[in-house]
Every structure is written in structure tokens, then in C-alpha cells.
Length: 304
Image 1 (cartoon, rainbow, N blue to C red):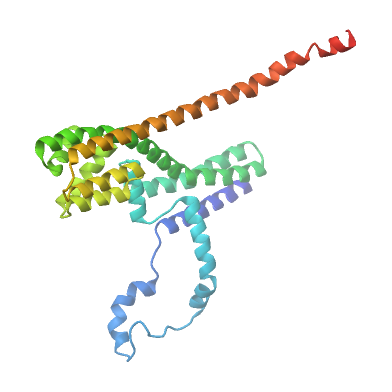
Image 2 (cartoon, helix red, strand yellow):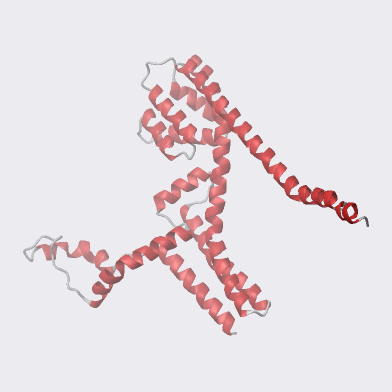
């Protein structure tokens, strides 16, 4: 019963801290400040320079503020908690349909439920040490599970972007040659295509519908894409909107260059996989071969 109570208290503390970090509340003084500015300004001093009374809470904040800020920063890095804009960008980069609220709610559930489940395994094993150890490991694993999953989705989407870029550049070239307009060619390609690059181009078109120029829209998706080669390609399209270059020919050259980069990447990956296949053979077969070679040595030396 003591172990269960300790596990529940620790899990509750972790959950409350995670909820506080994910949904911080503003101080009451900051919430009511807009309603008291006029009255404070009539006192004869600027609103920003109005002295504040130094109470116990203010003294504690000034004394423990840096330490609490460091602890909150460390907790944010462990739990992978970021602001709303950064989290929205990461979700878009991963290509997941989750909203920020759904992601934070799911992250909080994993952070709270995983240590409880792991501590229950330790309690069933009848060991307090295992219960505490599993509780800590479960808290760390539950806090990192969803961010690691998001990172894996981003990695796979980035690989898909590198694979699709040469094809997209090659398909844009004849469409621009026929339509004489980059916006029309991109719109026609978005209508029939699919994939992460097509999603980025569709978002660029939606951005232009919101009042941005086509060059600015390409710059926006270039700044948010996780793949450097895609960022260079989008910036090239942004530069091409000003004219002055033979865009169909330049796109074909871009496609050839991207295809060459992709080929080199596949060759490097194949070489790494070959080495990773040789290492287990060496680790497992080398000791066996050495034993077979050394087995007849005693009989050869001692004659037995």
C-alpha cells in the first residue's frame, strides 16, 4: 500500500507539472493590469515606471526565478514541450493531422499513464526498488514517446520529399512550357498529384489565396520544410517568379541534379547496410572459426 501511494503521488506530481508547463496561467497582476492602467497613470508617473510593492511573493520570485526558469527549461527539453507556433510547425513537418490540443492531450496521457503502469508491474513483482525504478523509467519513456514518434514521422516524410523532388521538378518543366505560367503549372500539378511536396505546393497556393505573393508563399514553405534540398528548390521557384530565366530548362537541370544527389544518397545507404550486414557475421562467426582452429592444437602439442 505504501508503494502504491508513493507511485500515485509521484505520478500525480508529474502530471500536474506537465499540465502546468503545457498550459501556463498568467499571474493575476498581469491579467488585471490592462484595467488599472488609467488609474495608475493619474498618479503622476508613467505606467511602466509605477513602483510595485515588494511583498513576500515578489521577493521569492526574484530570488528563485532564475532557478525555476532553469528547471522549467530542463523540464521542457525532457518533455519536448514547446510553444504553439513551434509545435504547429513540427506537426506540419511530420505530416500528421493532429492538432496542437490533441497532441498535448495525448502527450499528457502518455506522461501520466506510462509510469503508473510500469510502477504497477514493479508492485506485482513485490519489490519496492523495482517499482520506483520502473516508475522513473516509465515517466521518461512516456514523456519521450510522442516526441520520438513525431521525429520518426518527420524523418520518413523527409526521405519521401527527397525521393519526390526530381519527379516534381521534371513534371513542372513541360507544364510551364505549355502554360507559360508557374502558378497555373503548380495548380495543375497539385490537382493530380499527391505526396509531401504536393502538400507543400498546395499550401503555397492557399497562402497566395490569403493575399501573399507567389514568391512570398514559396519562401514561407521553404522556411518551414525540414529538408534542405526542398528548401533550395522552393527558393529557386520563388526566384523564378520574377522572370529572367529559362524556367523549363532550369527545372530539368534541377531534376537531374536532385536525381544525382538521390543516387549518391542511395549508394551511401547501401554501403552502410553492407557494412552493417558484415559486422554480425564477424562477431558471430569469428569466435567459432577461432575455436575450430585452436581445437587440435593441444593434441598436436601434447600428442593426446
